[in-house]
Length: 140
Image (cartoon, rainbow, N blue to C red):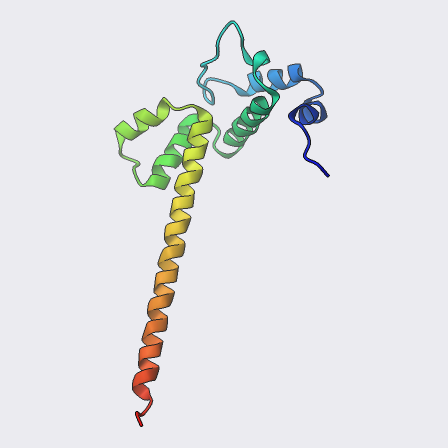
């Protein structure tokens, strides 16, 4: 089955673009959203795909963290920079989608580092076992 178009998804979930824009306006509170919209155009002129992505991101941030401030704290914690005021000030200027992407990237770096450390420990243990086995066998 082919993927649904953004318009089909909007009609399925929200019945119309206006309802999606209204849902976004409800989510776009000052604690979740930095308002950088063009006042003449607004959200009604943004593409359906972008509106759907923005709705998904704001919903995820609201459900997982509750506010941008808590999301920023989670990023700083994941990066190990909780006391870095300069980094925090820089992150506070970023839009919410970029913040969520930064958190996902930091979490991925942590997972990869842990995976690499486990792999290195496994290989070191395997080398030790091979050396011990080679030393215990009598040479002929």
